[in-house]
Amino acid sequence: MNLFGFFRVSKKRDSHSLHYNDQDITNNLGDDDAMSNINGGTWNSALYRVPLPGTSSVVVVKKLQNRSGSPVDASLDNRCQSEVNLLGSIHHDNIIGLADCLRTNNFIVLIYNHKENGSLHRWLHPDLPQLAAQGLVLDWPTRRNIAIGTVEGLCYLHHGRNHPIVHHNINSASILLDTSLNPKIAGFDFARINLAGPDQPVPISELTAANMFGYTAPG
Image (cartoon, rainbow, N blue to C red):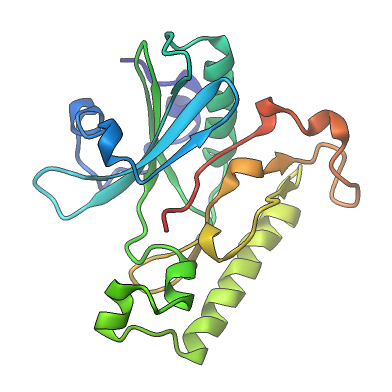
C-alpha cells in the first residue's frame, strides 16, 4: 500500500495523536457501512466514520474508486493528488484537517480528522431525534462564535494564500463542529484555486476535474 509521496514530504501526518495501521482503516470500508455515496462521472466516492481500535477516536474516511471497478489509474491518482496538495497545504483552526492518505491497487482513501459534533446543519434542525432527546440547542453566543470562526476560515481561503481558494459550497452542512462547538469548514468538493488572483473571477479554464477537492460533511 503506497502513500502519495507529496503528502509525506509536505505535511507531517496530522494524525500524530492517532494510532492506527492501514488495516484498521481498510477493514472498515464495507459498502453497506457508507454514510453517503457520490458519483463523480468515471469515479465513485463513499464516506465512512471509522472508529480506531482500542481508542475513543473516530476518523472520517473517503474511499474513491473507478466506477468500472478497474484498478486505480492516472486520472484517479491525479484527482486525489490535487486534493492532497490543497488540503495538505492548509493550516487554519477553522478548516478541516486532512490526516492521511492511503492507496491500494483498487482504491484510494483520504482520512480526515473527525469533528465530534457533526455538521452545523444538524444543530440548526433540532427535530433530529438524537438532538431533540438530549435537548441540545445552540445559544446566541455560540452561534456568534460559529459565525466568526467561519468568516475567519473563509478570509484565510480568500486572502491568506498566494492563490485564493474559492469554496463554492458554503452552507450549514459543510461546517463541522468540534468538541467545543468551534467551526471547521469542510465540503471542498466544488472548491477551486483561483490562479487569476483575489480580485478576478475563477476562469472557465480552471473549472476542471483536476481542481476538484473533496470532503463532504457528514450529516
